[in-house]
Image 1 (spheres, rainbow, N blue to C red):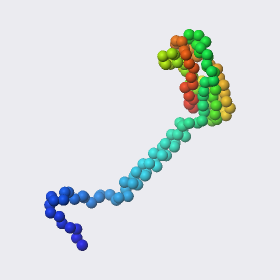
Image 2 (cartoon, rainbow, N blue to C red; image 1 turned 120 degrees about the horizontal axis):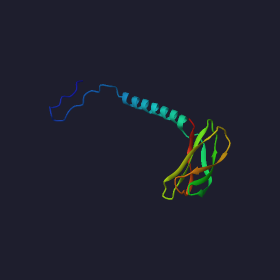
Image 3 (cartoon, rainbow, N blue to C red; image 1 turned 180 degrees about the horizontal axis):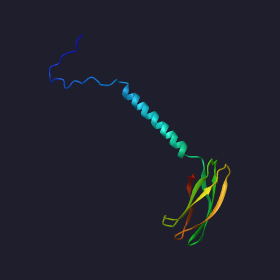
Image 4 (spheres, rainbow, N blue to C red; image 1 turned 45 degrees about the vertical axis):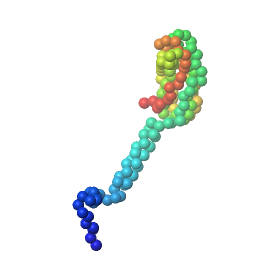
Length: 133
């Protein structure tokens, strides 16, 4: 059996025969997805959430240039972590910031820090904790 012959120009252009097998595109997409998941997993284990939480228990504005912040760090820490503590002015701008290093362990640690500010602060906040380098 031979392929039918159509009049030229009547039915548009005929498709050329594929130069690659049909399974190649889905296989390449699968490889890209698997590699992407592997990279995502590695990055998550390296930089992901280690279940360490830093939160402000209380703060007090001591003066126009000082805020006393009491915060706690909880969760299992396999390595030391660095926790940011900051203060904001009434307009929302950050007026003071410091980082405190907390040693490894699985206990709850409470720290009090007196933060020097560039102008009068109205809040004390935890900026989160990350593994110390």
